[in-house]
Image 1 (cartoon, helix red, strand yellow):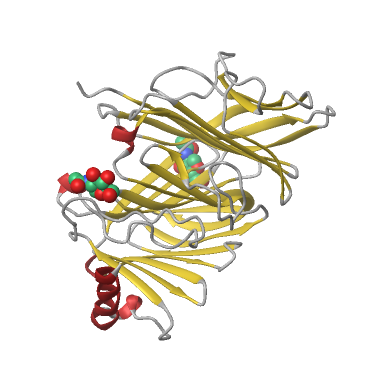
Image 2 (cartoon, rainbow, N blue to C red; image 1 turned 180 degrees about the horizontal axis):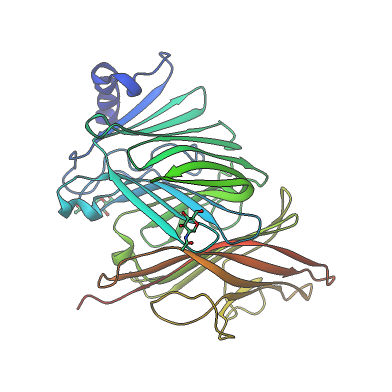
Length: 384
Ligand SMILES: *[C@@H]1O[C@H](CO)[C@@H](O)[C@H](O)[C@H]1NC(C)=O
Ligand SMILES: *[C@@H]1O[C@H](CO)[C@@H](O)[C@H](O)[C@H]1NC(C)=O
């Protein structure tokens, strides 16, 4: 704690440009590309601390932390995501631990992906508002997110050789923890699985995206989007055996499911969350092996043939069942992939695909609704 305070004060004096706080009461956390601590570093798992604040203020050679923002068009065919990383997993490339990834798919299936390594990342909290700046003066690059104190609005501005423009989110759902409690909760845990932490400031909201990607405009007007915060003691490849993650929005309903199988203890850690407008109506952290408690079942659809990843399986979508055995109610989502937004290169341990798509939702009273999805599937190939 003491040394962290010193770092903070020093940072205040040494920082310049984007990192200089406008008021004395601001807190600043600055990291440069090659700053890596030796040995274990502190991970902030206090559930009452602001969701946007840096959770691993000093990183070592294995920790990873990121701020992830995504969007999908109202017809489920186009989407974009921007992720701000503090993560040494690509440090072997010689460009350090800080990068921003921008990925997008246009309605016709054409994809764009750009990763920019930067020299500095600086997070300033002033009066509860969080500003993160990942910048590289030598590359004329500045990626900035500004998030309101209540996490209801996100404003991202991007200026780099290949990516420019804005990405905005307005939340219509409560910020929440992996087990479904809403922020703030003294008793909630931020752990999804061993060594892996997650908070979700925006389960879903309205997305306005106006970017130029290379030479081509990319626009989403009043689409759906969300915002996740993840941090772990190691890389996904070490922490997970496989996972699927998905955000569905249909009418007033938002569902987010993370279905994670840990490589640390081999156990399955599902986390399902369903809200109607800003009210949480269902959460589950069990699969069907606990049939007396609320549970979630995720099924990879087997057909008919459709858009699918090039790893693992040919499934063109997901079925998700959220079941409360006590009240005999069931919520059901059927998802269909429409396009691939991003896929990891082949030949690496992380066999990862992110989709955009459409969903149909069926409520217990048989209310039927159409909506959109963003989802990921990943299989980790054992390296030995
Ligand atoms: C980095 O810090 C994390 C969190 O304290 C720790 O679990 C991990 O072992 C550390 N990695 C190294 C290489 O020391
Ligand atoms: C898909 O749409 C984008 C954006 O309009 C365009 O730049 C691209 O050329 C199109 N791709 C194909 C294969 O038509």
